[in-house]
Image (spheres, rainbow, N blue to C red):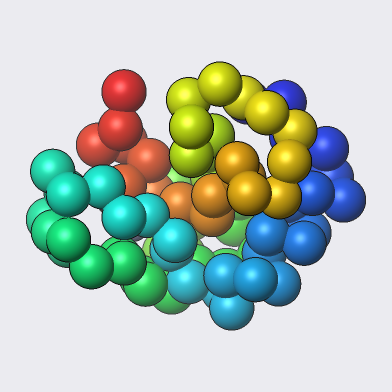
Length: 78
Ligand SMILES: [Zn+2]
Ligand SMILES: [Zn+2]
């Protein structure tokens, strides 16, 4: 993942501090995950942990492609 910090900050504001994952094969199913995550806990495996993910899989450095993802969804995604 090579998103720039400014893109990540914008994505974070859009997310409202909640996971944006919509993968249908995850436990949350066809709706947005919305698990709360905490800004300081990026990449740290603890409560409120999260990472960014490329929504398209192409690692585009765009706001549309930058998805805030909780840890459970992060580790469930390959
Ligand atoms: Zn999630
Ligand atoms: Zn998910």
